Each structure stands twice: as structure tokens, then as C-alpha cells.
Length: 109
View 1 (tube, one colour):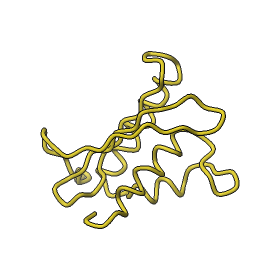
View 2 (cartoon, rainbow, N blue to C red; view 1 turned 180 degrees about the horizontal axis):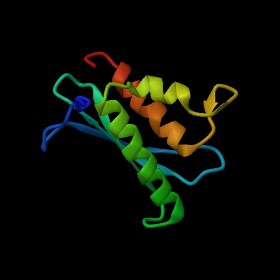
View 3 (spheres, rainbow, N blue to C red; view 1 turned 90 degrees about the horizontal axis):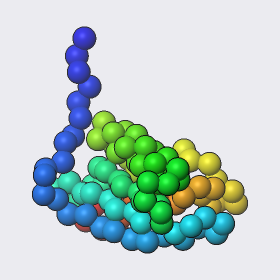
């Protein structure tokens, strides 16, 4: 059996950090890591209270999303797969993936 290919990021890379607010949720800090071609290949999501249940859930979701992007899924594909209400993300993880998709779609990406 062959190993699936994974695009690994260099140890030093460009990243973009933004604080996001979604109605009904506490603010979250999202950092996206870019490869040399300016594609988003990782996302880190932190809740306002470190080590809280929400922070741990966001961290786990971000790891899964990052692995998916490193195996070929785009941030936009992941964002489109997340639950939505009226076209807006229903969760803070969805908002983080929307942010990652916006960065990925920006000129130069």
C-alpha cells in the first residue's frame, strides 16, 4: 500500500493572524500558515480561555482541517462543508475556515 502524499510546511513560514467574532460565541484567534506559493495549508484556532473545553475542541478541529489541507483539500472546500445558517457559518470553527478560505482566495494565493 502506498502512503498518501502530504505537503509539509517548512519550519519557518508566513502566517496571518486575525481575531474573529461570531454572534453568540466568544472571540477566537485564528492563525493560518501559508506555503511558498501562498496557499493555506494549516490553521490554528484559539479560544479566549486557554485550555477550556472550547479551546481544546477548536484545537482538535484545526488539526483535522490542517491535515486535510496538507493532503489536498482546500480551505474553501472545507469551509463549504461546515454547517451554515443563512449562508453564515454556524460555529466558530466554520468562521475560522471561512477566514482561511478568504486568505487562500486572495491574489497571490
